[in-house]
Image 1 (cartoon, rainbow, N blue to C red):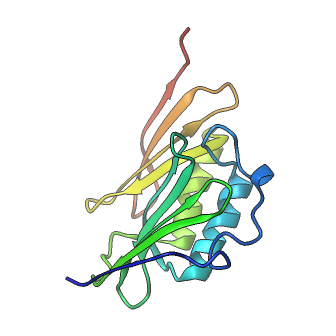
Image 2: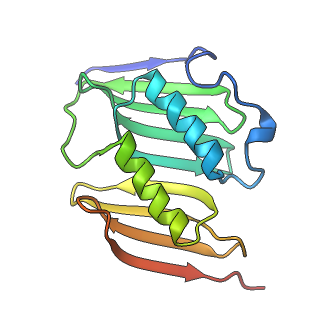
Length: 161
């Protein structure tokens, strides 16, 4: 397997994002997320496996594939500053999500009360897990089936203490 590690040019993903556009708690509003997804698609992502906001390190990570099958793992700071990119020769799995499927899954989460996004991941069995928070800051975990985006499970966990 071939691996490539590159520093991202600031224009590739981070341009046009300001610190004020990002949430201070490591999560993203849907408007912020849509902007960042557009940047990822502009960079070359055509299929997605994972999106994750890491508030401990102030990083957003995209994992997925380009049209030519190369797998991408791109990280940037929450303010949009690019941190790293790795690429490796791969083949795009059928279970990965297109940008439109990803947006549809996120719309499902929003319709179920998720106001702030933290993580989305799809696995090889076609399960999509989305984590985030509602307006009351309760954690929401939503599991969907990839093929029809039907809900498999919805959990809302209230904050304690």
